[in-house]
Image 1: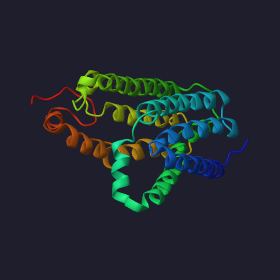
Image 2 (image 1 turned 90 degrees about the horizontal axis):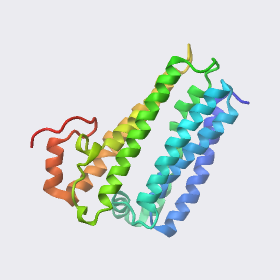
Image 3 (image 1 turned 90 degrees about the vertical axis):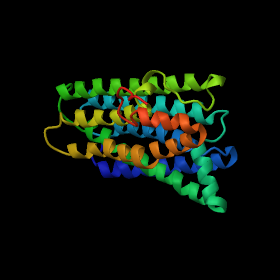
Length: 265
């Protein structure tokens, strides 16, 4: 086994880059760039599962962390595959990017897919840090992190299922979902996605000394992406265009991210 995290990350990045080249080639035929999101999820699961066999660290903890990431990533990737790719038209975000990029769409998409490959390696670092803890399992913080993970992954899955069930009804076309968790947050799936990345921060507290701070990469980077870049800004601009005043009222009464009781209109 190797204990050199840099070589593991470089290898993970290289393998992910190859995967994304294959998916970029596939999207040229399918005309659905959302396969990049599926590739990110499945790629992350594969990379972290490989880490469990390649790093030194307490074996039981390595297996637990790998299982946590694989369950999280495969569930999310399968949801995206069914909800946005399989027999579905391309997500509005990618259609907008194609229009913006014009004749250069494929070259820009190539580098977008490669950015996803780099993100696989980047987000694989927090679980890699936790896996290398050599101390016996299971520390108090291991258990707290695992319980936190369970709440976060279950919350995200529930939010995704509630939204999918709402959209499956033809009479809800162009309506705003306010059922279940969506009554308390405009983006509960994003909130629980962000919450999930704190699991590895908590588990890293069991490491007496070392690279604990590196696990903060997960929640910080994911928070910035969801709040400022690819998450809420894109989703809300589309929702305002398609749902108009109903969504404007939803924004006035409901928190964007952290679930809370809705305000009076």
